[in-house]
Image 1 (cartoon, rainbow, N blue to C red):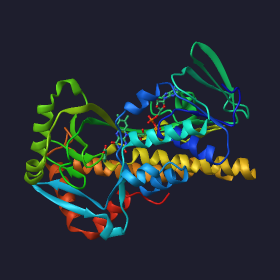
Image 2 (cartoon, rainbow, N blue to C red):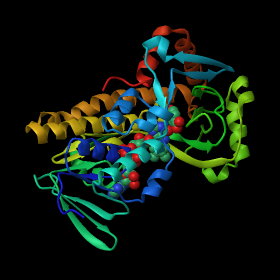
Image 3 (spheres, rainbow, N blue to C red):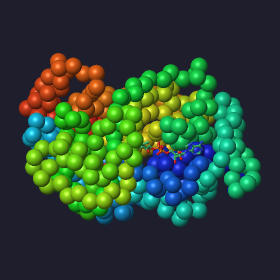
Image 4 (tube, rainbow, N blue to C red):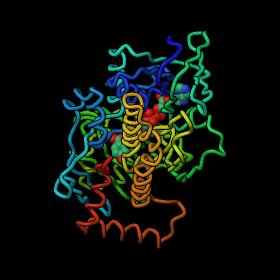
Length: 391
Ligand code: FAS
Ligand code: PHB
């Protein structure tokens, strides 16, 4: 275990692993410290849609081989409401697309690259604690395999997610928090069944939102909106499939192939931003700094753009002694973060049933959908946000 490194990275999710790989490729020593096991990290079923910015970042990190071979290029999505489906054709509208490739596979590819690089990664670390990041000699202490460790570093990258230690280590008086907690979550099911359609279907229904996604041509990922108080254990597979079918248009309901769930979990929905994203020698990236409701498929993609900016800033500092990009990091991230927060909030408000919404609110939702599917300009706006704004 090294006692010193240039960059200490807290968290081995997509943000921490991608940052570690970008720095390693640039010849900058770094250590990743993760509290869970690699198996646990890989067992999380999360995002499924990659923007081209994320695909390019993975290519720059040298981990895009399997993604290029197995990822599915999607040229659009469909919106289902009032019994009909309406396609948003990204290709025709803006000439760009997205890639379907599960976060689990991104994590697997990055973990393999980390192992091949020989750069240190510590799994199952406990009592991870950040020290002196308001000085030029920050330290990270932690326990591993029964021993206490201290890691001196130049910089700390807080890539430890919403519940991590990094943001929690910053005095509350130094942060400004912006938050919306939604009164519902997403009950998700993974199944070895062929997807119901070639592209994703986002469904708005009086019973609630539903999403038909996929991981491959033989593995599907489905979600239904449920109350925030709901528990996954209360949902048998049969109950889930019946509810999903009830929220889809007749053609999709008819085409749905059901099967045993191989994963079932509920994700809470919230919008959250911590400003700023830098505190002396500590930089927050990914879910450690911001959360979006998954409706806009932005969470993983924002983590990637944060990490791209941070890697570029650290490379400029080490290779040219130029601190300017590090100094601009927080403002640059937040400009992109807030645009993604807006889009994710808008997609969530457009497609979900809010328990306190009255008849007027429901009519406004329907009118918004009718206007959207009838306006090329509105569809183009959705398309350019969904495929990802420029980094
Ligand atoms: P992550 O949370 O992925 O990784 C943080 C890592 O830090 C974890 O491995 C954690 O174990 C570790 N850690 C935490 N505390 C630590 C400590 N004290 N010391 C060391 N390590 C520590 N996004 C989408 O785009 N689409 C989706 O459908 C979607 N579904 C989601 C479902 C759920 C349940 C959740 C929680 C998120 C979902 N997201 C989705 C968002 C998700 O994909 C995140 O944006 C993405 O995982 C962000 O990656 P990281 O920033 O690396 O954070
Ligand atoms: C997924 O496949 O998990 C997924 C896809 C699109 C979203 C959210 C989740 O908006």
